[in-house]
Image: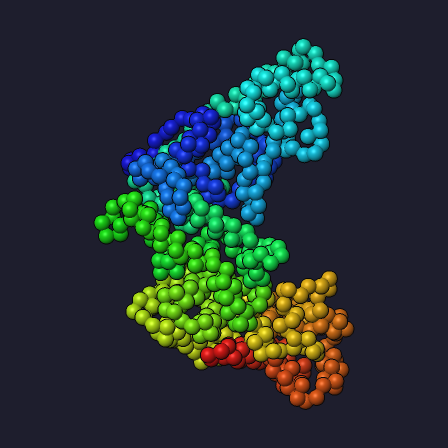
Length: 586
């Protein structure tokens, strides 16, 4: 048998809450957002009240001596001796309800969990307006522990109010008193915790978590770093969480805000930008170790090293959350033709490119215009080729290392341009990209790049004077969309050719944008029937532009379906190339 990695420690609920209050146990303000529904919290209290077991806790010793954290702020905070690995949602539920404090939900809004209790029959419920008005209920059980008058006086006050509405017998009074007393005694509820040794690394901790809690959400390196931020730089984590929340709602009045139409990141995603910019690293495991204070040469941990590395992270995050930087970067994304969130297939790609924006601006002092141009081209390339999909950390680290010997703005730009040149070869444009368009996924990177290229080339919708950029503009909304995705060879018509498989009929090479009225009129008509009706309305010059913008082969309406799609994919690839080359600097 291998060495034992843990020891068993017994707690009462009261002891756990006291240790959280004094900072002995670290309950991050959110290691993960609180995702339990209130009904599950209700059931947790009901199980405890009835004496059922509710599982163990898994704690992890932090391995550092007792000290105070003071990273980026003036208020000293005690460093928790233990961190919670498993049991976060349960302990957050219990702590929040008993202390009467709000939790932070997945949408970054604070919400108080209010659990009610009916002493007459020991029924727990989630409080609502009806329950608040019902004298049979304790509307918020946190009152039992936090009224400051003692639970005996609380029981007397509850019964007195109940008697004002109805008669209460002595037998019922005794039963009510006993049940509220039992509720109060929940602070003596026993818990068993498995405390992992400080010598256990984060990979082993994650493996333990998975082995003993297969139903839980697996931990990842970002979780560990965010937990460290909660312990040693809590205000920094809160700033990042607020930033993420503010990206989701429009600003009020003239108040500056990170709200945008491209991305609403979560903290673990945004963290990758500050890590890549601050440490020139993408592997979060490396960053996690140095943030714990590990000297990678001596393998020793120290508070001084930990504080030094946190200051690096603090400086990087300050620039990452700067609203001028954020919106200047998003302008570069828009100048690449990607003008809405629908067109962003990978949030990680966008956030990695943001790291290059910050590196170019601050480390190489690239001028504003040149930086916007090269970042627009870099994002277009990364998005089109799925550069940061799959082994994203490995590829990102390779890209960052290419800058190791670069010392000038010109060198920074040339490095990115060389990578793009090596990636977007003639074989890519003529062979690989047409093959990437063999898909029915309307949000495939290649198809999204096609839409972006239509934006860049000022294309208009088919049979319309309405620009594609306007129909894709997220700031323009209406009850009925002005434009719809249209099957050039309608699905109803293809059925007459015995083509019914969605993978065939919904090929992206069969899709384009038309005004919704035209889409309705065309319905299931044979393209040889409907196209001539529209064709006669336009001059040859306009038709040529229309064919170019929508990658339509000559006499496309008369071609066999399979041949049409093959030819159109090649023209779509050419349009994407043309769009990319219109980005300034191309």
